[in-house]
Image (cartoon, rainbow, N blue to C red; front, side, top):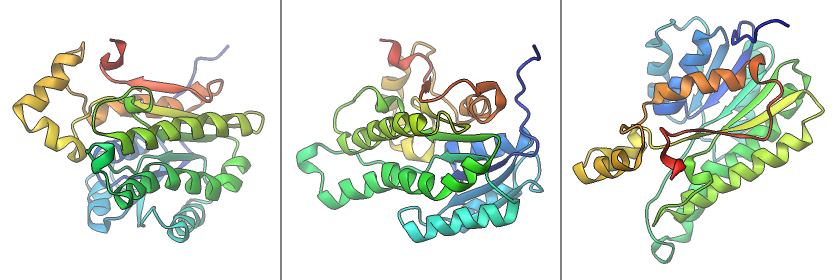
Length: 254
């Protein structure tokens, strides 16, 4: 029996939310492992930085600016990936939005905005990418959830609901595609130092709250998600589907 390979040479990937943080790290990590990668997010300037400043160089990376709350622009992003790379093997749904407030203080439009990007866009992207992933010999979907796909904190119900829903979408889709050669899994980061969590880690109390609750006694970095993402994108995870891979420094252990 041959050893598992994490080589992604010849694989074609689309990563959403790739303009910063976890998405940027994963996009660069997939490219470093050999994949061709289309980086998708709203900010064209930030996407350009993701591509041009990549340690592996930009020869295997390209970008497409799109609002992932729009079904039309999602379809355009998938078409751009397929036309530019000749197909699609790996889809990483990472784009996310957050809002901290109690349920009674959360405006319905805010709720809809959070759910649209964290859950609806993943459904639409998976559906639009389906013909190409099913035609691939190496189809992989990596939905980026959160530890809050499984546990809760106070005053974050919109985000928790959306990420919990994404766990359900992952399980449901994994069953639909289990016999069709496409694996669908959920990557669940813990508290990672990104722009989205900056309001927490830039304050002494917020930073200490996370550190003290994390058995490894540190915040995660976006690069901590690269190895797990490459594993889920590679042939090494071919017998794994419908699962949640939690990367949180032990935060959910207790």
